[in-house]
Length: 604
Image (cartoon, rainbow, N blue to C red; front, side, top):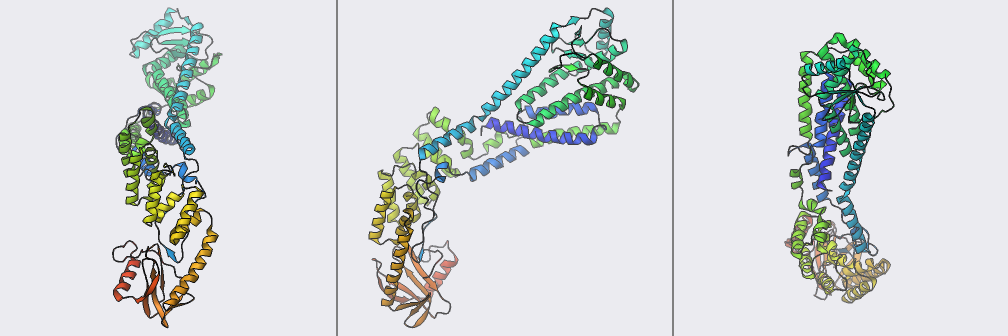
C-alpha cells in the first residue's frame, strides 16, 4: 500500500478514536463544562486529522509496523502457486515399507503468464488506490467552494449597504469595545433567514432587515463580532477541508456537525459572559426574533449565522437560560481534560516514515517494484541485488517476480544455491519460470534424480507434461528406483498400478528374506527360529528402509545387501549399533551417528 495512503488512514483512525472519546465525554459533561471548551477542543481533533506529523514512537506507528512485519513473514504465495498446472501432486505416495524424502511444496500454475499479469494488475491497483481518494477529495472540495461562491453571489446580488448613521455608529462602538480595529461593513439582504457574517478579508454583517430594535441590534452585532474575532469562518473552512480529505470516514462528517453546533453554543456563552447572566432572557428573545425573518436561501456554507435552524435554536435557548459562570474547579477540570486530549492525540499518533523505515525491505519495495523494473529500467545487476534482499527477507512473491527478470546464468546460480540450501519453497517458485525443454531444467532434474533428492524432483515433475513424466517413469522402472516410481505414478494418477507393484514387491521381498533364513508371521519376524526384537533392512540408495521392533523378541538382526540391492546375508546387530539406532530415533535431527535416514518407520 502506498505510504501516503497509510499515513492518511492512520490519521483518520487516530482522529476517529478522539472523535468517539469526545462524543462519549459529551454525554456526561455537556452541561458541566464550558461550551467554549467544547467548541475549541475539536480543533485538536481537526489538527490530528490534517497534520501528517507525530512522535516516532506511537500507537499507530507500532500497529502498522506490526501489521507490515506480519505481512512480510506470512506473505501468501502468488496466484500461480495456488492453481496447479496439472493434477496436484501433493506429498509423494509412500513406497514399500517406509520412504524418506524431504517436504514438498504446492504445484505451479497452468498458465503462469496470465496469473502473473493478473497479479501485476492487482499490485498496480493497490499501489494507485490513493488516486481514487485524491480525486474524490478534490471533487468534494471544488463542490463546496462552488456552493460557497454561488451563495456569495446570491448574497451580493441582493445586498444593500446600510446608510443609517446611527446603526453604523453603534456597530463602530461595539467593534471598538471588542478590540476590533478593522472596519466592519453593515448591509441588508431581505432574502436571508438570519443575520450572518461573511467575508474573510472584508468582513460584513448582513441583516435580514434594517428595521430592528436597538436591543436586538446590540445582541446581533455582538454575536457576529464574536464570530469574527474568534476567526470562526477560518475554523469552519478548516473543518470542511478535513471533511473533504476524510470523505470516506463518516465520523469526520459527524464531527463537522458537532463543530457547527458547538460554534453557536460557544458564541452564545461568550456573548453572555461579556454582558452578564441578567441579559440571558433578552438575548434569547433576540434569537427568536431572528427566526421570524424567514428567507429562501438556506445554504450558508463558509458563513457564520446568528441562528441556523429551529431545532438548534431550541437547544441554544435552553443553554442560554441555564448559563452561569463556571467555577475554578470546573476551569481546572477543563484544563486537565485539554492536556489529556492533547497527550492522547500524540500517543495515538500516525503511521510515521520512521515506522516505514523499520519495515522489512520486502514490504517497502513491494509496492514500487513494477515501477522500478519496467518504467525506470532496472538493470540485471540491480535485480541481482534486489533478489538477494528478498531472499534474506523471506519474501516469496518478490523473489519470484525478480527471478523472472534474471538472465539464464544468474538463474542457474540461484537455483544451485537454493538446491544447496535445501530451500524447497524458493526453489519451487523459481523453477516455474524455466522452460521445461531447456538444458537448465533438464540438468536439475537429472541432478535431483541422481542425488535421490525426492522433494526437489517432485517439484520439477509438477512442471513436466505427461509425455516427459512417462519417460522418467520408464527410467525409474528400469533402475528399480521404487521411491521415484512412487512419485511418478502419483503425478500420472496411476496409483492403482503402483499398488499392484507394491504387492509384487512384497511377495518378492518375502521370498528373498526366506532365502537367507528370515520368515514372517504377520508383522513378526523370525530368524533361525527366534523371534526378532529389532529387524532392519536398509536399501543401498537409502531411499527407504524397513524397520520392525517387537519388545518380545530376543535377537536384533539386519539384512546385508550389495551395491546392486541384492540380499547377501543376515548379521546380528551389535550393542553399539542398537544404541545408535535407538538414539537416532529419539533425536530425528541427528544424522551424524548413523547412516540411515531418521524418519518414522513402518513395518510390513
